[in-house]
Length: 122
Image 1 (cartoon, rainbow, N blue to C red):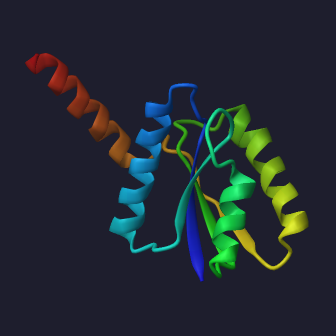
Image 2 (image 1 turned 180 degrees about the vertical axis):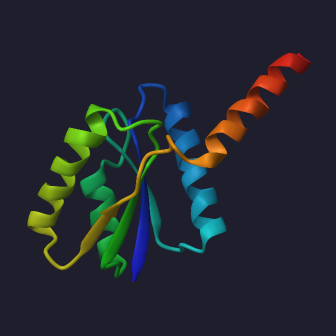
């Protein structure tokens, strides 16, 4: 069984963390992923190990981590692989795949154009 985790940086502003959780719920529903979670690198809960543990407890044996990051910076190059490695040392019967960040996806340019047009209308 496959689950997804949307992995974000996290914020000291809880409404920002809740906005990520809302995106996560919407993505899970739209994609038909009944087993989904949101995880944060810092300043938000749960962290990635706790989110994975929750999904494993629900019977998940494969997890796709979807970074809610624009580009591949230090957190995705260093921190996320380290955290996943630590999880896999404990959770030996699961597979974890890490999807690319948002940068490079063709929809991103469209989104930015929409935002520019919205700004022009105000």
